[in-house]
Length: 254
Image (cartoon, rainbow, N blue to C red):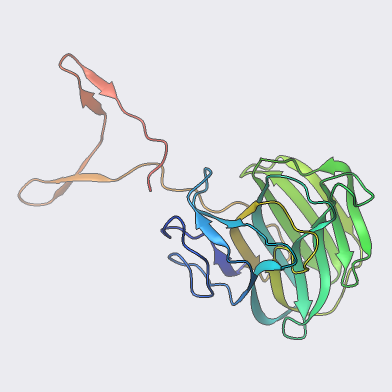
């Protein structure tokens, strides 16, 4: 599996408005961006992430263009603060140089005629090909949404954060066999207006296999001391409180 594009935003300052050049170390800047300016925010355990505050009657999406592919995989982390009145477009695969939608992963809205928060796989015309039934995406919880496409066969699965715990899944046997050359994240239609939502840790692979969570952050720092000749490794045991060494622990190194 080769990751051909990814974006995590590490190191980007809180409050930065996203452009097509905004990226952290090792990130692939988004070549596609539309609608109300999306903002990098310092929030959640995978901070930073991108806040989408879609204005009424505006699209709001990010994405990449690339060489055409028939088999591939896509990953994005998602948190919803509320459901929209109609289906929300989360991921879209396109052809003809980002011009023609071939498939979409959507979430049913409160008035979508289905279980609210249900995952739906649709074709380019928006016709539902499969759904997750009564299994739905929860509000105010980070989920990892992964889509795997193998020559038209399509599976979309939501996991709880970085775990392998499945929240909801949908599988379609044939969506499209046309090569995809662009992917968008977020609603590219002007309606409905989606309440504030967050996306993070985007990835695109050229292999039809689950991408999985990003590599974890280092569990701790590396310490050493110059002894006059060489660097000698040190182990941090704790802090001396006047009587004994009290162990230290760290939640995260950033």
